[in-house]
Image (cartoon, rainbow, N blue to C red; front, top):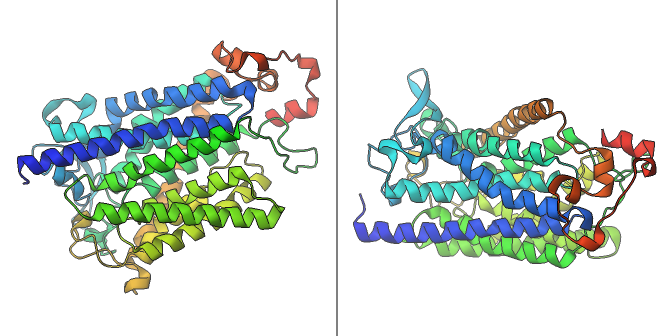
Length: 470
């Protein structure tokens, strides 16, 4: 148990970091809205605004209980919550297990519903706030991939499901003492699945959800020509996009350095520097590649590159050297450009760089340098990757398993939930007439920019365009 003063410092540090992550919501709103056309800005901004409240409600009702309700005394789980006083055996101590060969594999927590009962404490409230803003990032990512065609009613229901269940179950498996975290002590796979600040728990989940939903809902009208080749649809406000990206980069320090859940460790300086280096390296790499391909440096790809590097460094940031962070950022920038072009050419409109997200969780198993992580997931010794002595591939294998599980979970469950919502309300997508005219007035009742309001009749829409919207 830590003393009262140290715990108070940890509370303050974690809360401030949580406030930084919460402010990332503004960054996402600016990036996504700037990349949309003027006729859809009120709708896109409203999704980014309301998802904060919707995700919070789902997480408050049951998401936090499912995710963290069994973390104390579980077979695996983060060591960080002890810094918030959550090593008290009476707190967050109910886990649904599957027992195989005498080993306990955690499936789902079940204490802390509505933040009530014996699990309520100062530390659990701080942890709730911090984990809630992480969850909200996951819920926000699909709003960009489905912008300009997603019915607002479908969006509201799906966002509640993300906060209440989809995000939280995988979050339990990785961070709440679940079976992926226990791969170390139960199966001897290094420290089990390791994700320091959310490359898989937050960003890979959000990226996979965005991709599967974008595939199911289909591309925007006019995105592809009659031969199936992609056509550019330019956003209306590039300065908004670039400013939003800087806001996200600023808030990311709360993501990564804040995941220590403690202001008493000197590791937070290295984490912050690694975060900065990876983001800069990925920005330059993506810019140079797109410049080489098209002969011009593309502003939107600069932003994509920076975000790709930030996502990639999120899992390994505490376990690697600055040189490794720089290299991870370069690779992330290259993969981001490739993934954006690949998905666009394969009729997935508005991809979010999910493959660069996958790179982050795998990088732990390659570049963890064996200087940090003693006790992580209740395994003694530091986290070590393939390039620094783990020649048995055990840590890398744990990372690959976690990535595969994350992808499968979100494709199957996220896709199923999305399709069920569509059946429930009639359609997840607005009509072709609404999409062409703009979603602001039909969906929101108010324009983002009154001077851009248009009235388009159904006769003005080509039959081929209507077919492509279905």
